[in-house]
Structures are given as C-alpha cells and as structure tokens.
Image (cartoon, rainbow, N blue to C red; front, side, top):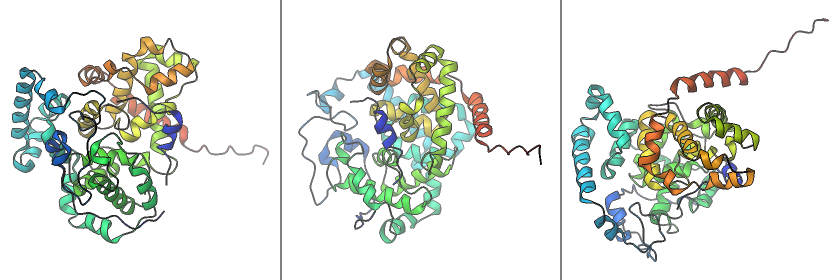
Length: 390
C-alpha cells in the first residue's frame, strides 16, 4: 500500500539521534530477481527463511490480494515482456561487462542515456546501473577494506537508535521483516558504518529508507558507498544537509518548493495558503527519503533511476506534478481533509507512466538556482546599523 505520513511522522523522520553490542555480518549480496520470486531464494541464515502467510507483489512487498507473483507475471501481456527484453539488451550493450563501457557511452551519447534512464532501468541491472550513475563504484575501488573496518572495529553513539528504528524501515517488505534476519542485519551494518564514517551527520531515522532501498539491489558494501556518494555529492549536490543539525537543506528545499507550487500550480498554492498548509506538513519526507518512505515501490524505483542521474530536481518536479494531477480535488478540501489527502494520494495518480511524463515536462532548474540564491540572501545575517547618536 501507499500513502503519505502524518505531520507528527514527518517531524519524527527528522529527529537526530546509544549502545548495544555490534551486530556484524559478512557482505551480503542480494540477487533481486531471485528475491522477488520467493523468500526461499534469499541467502540462508541461521534463523531460517521467513514463512510467508500472505502473497507478495513483484517487489516483494506484502499485498492483500490473493494473486501469486507467478500468476501475476504470467498475466503480463507478451508485448510488454518483449519490450522489456529489448530494453534489457540495449542496457547491457550500453553498460558492457561489469560496467566497462559505461563512461565511454555516457560521454558519447548523453541524451540517449538520459532518455533510457527516464524510461526505467531494467530491474536485473538496476543495482549495477545505480552504482555506475552515482559514482559509488569508483569510491569503492578507491577505499578497499574501509567498510569492513567501520563495521567490525569501530563503535557508534547511534547504535541503539539504529537498532530501535530498523523494524520501522520498509516493514511490509519481506527482506526486512525477520527480526535480526539478513535484511535487518545488513541495514544495521550500513547505517552504523555511515554514522562512524561521518560523525558530523551521524544517524537520522530517514536515512534508513535510503539504505534499505539500496540493499534490495546490492551488497552492504556497495550500498554503503552509494550512500556516501549521495550524502557527500560524488556527482550531484551533497545531500548531507538534509540530516545535519538544524536540517538546513530541508529548510531550503521547502522554501523553494513552496514558491514553485505557487508558480506552477497557483490554484493549489493559493488554497494551501488560505488553509494554512505549508510544505513541512507533507513534503519533508519526499526530500529526506526521495519518495521511498510511503510511495509504491514501482514508482519509487523509477524516481530513483532519474534522481541518481539528474539530481534532486526530480523530487521538485514530481511533487509539483503530483499536486497538479490532483489539484481539482485538493482545492475543494478544508484543512483536515487536505491533510488526509496529502497522506493518501489516489492510486491512479501514483502510476509511474502517468506521473513521470508530467514531471519531465516541468522546467525548474533555472528557477531553483534563483530561489536558492534568494534563500541564502534571506538567511544571511544582517549587520546591525550603527547608532546614529554615537
């Protein structure tokens, strides 16, 4: 299921954060195709596999309908399966064996890469593609052994907080449901390692959704370095300001987003102002988790494809597109119902092939830079005027 989070939950995601014995595990590689097919395909653990009492969708999230993953796959049209096969062949040719051709292809045909990323990365290549796009593969190669050192030999002040929050991260996904199972242990290791690697940021609850999503497609060590690449800005602007004390980047993004809503969706912007709805009530988690917290996996993964390639502007575009798609309903609602609607968008508005094309047509790059400069001027301390009587 999907749906946003409450105002109190939105604030909880931002709370910075103890000590328990370190839970360690060797690097865990997740084969996503096997993982989606059945829980028994997960790497074995001492605790054994998780018994499934309910069916899962193609992304291994629990679902309420009795349709099995196998029957769901069989029900997909042949034309769709053929299209996916063609896309897979193109991506394999573009990436090369183990990513050897990627950098050359990006330099030669950047627009082709952009177009193919926007159409969606084939799921079986998503983990490798994300590492290549983000620059995290280079970080890993330059820092061999660092992750193991951080996990096995360092301690973190946030260990207790990480353990407490793990069960709250993707609770409907089978990979993370088993207490102290492989998913939870991998998530703990990555978050603990980052809290040691960057003690200024440490650990904040929302980071678990970033790390958790990455772990569905790659090993612990790969996920750790991709998290580093995102927060430190290996390719795009650093994300660490989303999690620093005072949440400076969250405040900036919300300022920019509020202005963009008024400019791109003026009826919604005016209605929100009338009802005293501000972006901190509904949009903070969009930026902090890049839509991975409460949106369908089918949409979140497509967003992440584009986010890693094009940067944070896709979050602004998606937010505007979502409000624009739902504006006829939103402008009719009073405060209480607005809050509910912003937590529970209709399913038809969250279809990737509906929402993403709307977002791609929204231009924000130039305006975002103008608003960033305006925000910095606004936040810059003003000198005290000299006392004319002195």
